[in-house]
Length: 196
Image (cartoon, rainbow, N blue to C red):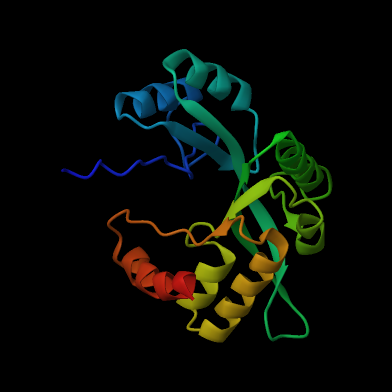
């Protein structure tokens, strides 16, 4: 008996509201996901949730699940260093209404308390808004991938454990293949960390 094809849903997708990262409108993304047979699609614009109503309406119209989220800029402590921090990316997906509210609150804070055009959330605030949220470790500018790219494997493990403490089982290590050699090198190092 043939095995059914694996189910796939893109969980890190930028619309045109993510300047320089996404080119398609939320409606176009929903339509394309339905054409490809995805059961669901997440929209994760950078520090932005302005397209979620359009996206949700479009997903409903084409019969797929719409997952609401954002790729948040987070200022995190530098592991094993007493002083210093770095700015990283972290993908947050709403699992519930409370999760949606938490992500929206984080984005509001990021935009109100940072320089215009450079929103970020401090790590301690993120840790208090994790209920109802599922996190992906992010793109190559994520906390763990940055540290691995620097050859700081122990620091990457510490960052992973800190994310795990905040999100528990609601955390996944994100891997990608955009056919970029530097990403493929990182993914080879992310996979054993994820398994561990």
